[in-house]
Amino acid sequence: MNHLKRLAGQFRCYPFWSQLLITIGSVLVLVMIWSACGAGNRSPSFPPPIEKPRLELPSRNGPVLALAFSPSGNNLASGTSDRVARIWDPSKGVVIQAMKGHLGIVTCIAFSSDGRILVTGSTDKTIKLWDIAKGRENRTLAGHTGAIRSIAFSTDGRWLASTGDDRRISLWSIDSGEELRVLERHQDPVNAVAFSPDGNVLASASNDKTVRLWDPATGRLLRTLYGHNSRVLSVAFSPDGKLLASGGAAQVDLGPRTRTGQLILWNPLTGEEEYVFQTTFGDVRSLTFSPDNRVLANSDGFGDFTVVTSWEVSTRTLRSKWTAHRGTINTLTYSPDGQWLASGGDDGRIRLWQ
Image (cartoon, rainbow, N blue to C red; front, side, top):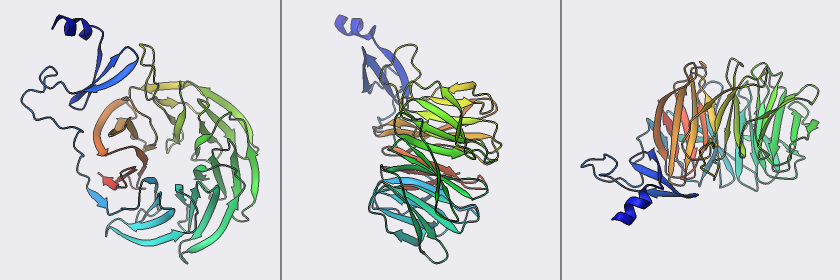
């Protein structure tokens, strides 16, 4: 007993659902200490139970890597590990179209602003443009030498940005399929890319721990944002363009000055860091703003312990946190009217929350 008391003095405990995360030296250990943590007579739940979504689509096609709502909000597109992109009618819970043609995992997906084109990126190093009305492939964009990790349409729908493991960012003409320019300043794979609402700035997030802001019209690097202590996995502009959010990978070292699982708000005009949210202990693989600018939602956690967290943007305060999937949450997206938040993860499930 005395030995345990001495050992307990070396622990630093962090609340995590009904369990504790404890660091012993530099090792992170998950433990169950119900009575000691004020759990009372509650029965242990390990892992924590999944919250019940408002809707769940019957996806059983392997891990869900990407989700995107159509501009009307009536349809939801998914990209999965079985190399197929699907368009769902969420209200009926059925697949209305399946786009087959990629030779690798579908890692990213996006609708054009007019809803006529679906674009998919894959580990097969290609980007495909699909004519939704005809249900067939229109064009394949080839130029990357590594897996595609992210794609984004400009607001006016004229340009498509793509990025991936080859460390390059490509800008494409949607009309011609021509690669207009290549942006190459990142030192490591680029995980995410996003256009500002006015289309004048392109943000990119990389394993080199930086977020870079570009002028897409000229390809000029505007500024580099430093603040993450590990790989930057996700990036998004607020709908009003006044904020930029970036999410990073968890830092292994849990020292007192380390901000684990970083989620940072930036001023995109000045490049200044405005706020760092206190996330849990996992990778912030996905984040998204609500269309009214009020809420920022992000994935968080590790292994089976993953949550969706939402924050009030104006006050920077925690709004809600819930266990959404068993396993990594890869993608989050709001519907255009803000009524639904869709999530997809390694458990192969697509869930819609209100």
